Image (cartoon, rainbow, N blue to C red; front, top):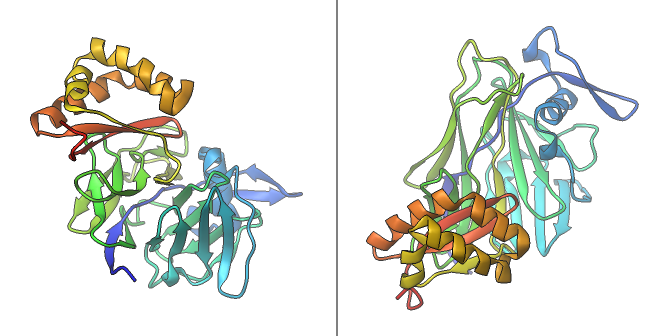
Length: 315
C-alpha cells in the first residue's frame, strides 16, 4: 500500500438562515434566534442562499456506519455517521477528507432531504457534505453568528508525495508540485451573506493545511454561505502546452487564437471558458514561462484553472 500523507486541507462553506420543511418542500423563514437552528434548518439555509450546493444530489444508500454512500461517474463517495471518520473517496482519486471540528461535532443527523446529512459542530457552525451526481463533493458549513469560527481546516489523507497547492487565481489542487500528478481540484472559494452579498473569503496554505478563512464581522447579515467544491481529476478535460504555446498564451491576442484549439479536448464549453478567462490565462502563462514552466489548462464545471507543470513535453 502507498503511504498516505495527512494534509489538513480544503475548507468549506458558510451559511445560516433558518428554513423549514413543509410537505417535503423546503420553505424559508428567519428564525428568532439563529443559534437554535436544527439539521433541517441548516440544509434549508444552504438551499436558500446557494441552491446548487444541495441540488443534483447523487442517489445514496446508508448503513450502520455510513450516513450516505454514492457511486457516480467512476467515483465512490462515503459520508460517515461519525464525523471523525471523514469523507472517503475512491475510484478516480484515493482521498479521505476530514471534517472540521470532528472531535467535538455530533454524529450525522437526518436533514429530511434525501442524500444530505448534517453535523452539528457545537460551536455555532454546521457541516453539510453533499455528493453530487457528477461525482463532485461540496462541503458546506452553516455559520449561525459572529461568535462562530472564521477558520475551517480539512485534514486530508492522499497517496504518496502529493500535497495541497494554492494557485494564483485563489483555487487549489491536490497533487505533485510539478503539476504532472493531480488528484483533485478545488475552485477558488466564495461566500455570501443572508442577502446574497459577497463576504470576503480566501484559502491559505501552511505546511499541509489548506484553510478557508471567512471574513464576516458583527455587522454581517447571517446566514453567510461559502462553498468550495472538490472536483476529482479523473474526467476533467485538460490541455498541456509546450514552451512555444506558453509564450503565445502570454499574449491575449495569441491566447484568443489558441482558445479555438481547446475545443478538440474540452468542447465548445471549454472554448467559451477559455475566452472568458483570457486575462487570467495570459497572466498565469507569463508567470509560468519566466519560471521555466508551462501551463496546464484544467476545465471544471464553469471554471478553467491554469496549473504550472514541467516535464519533457514542456520544451
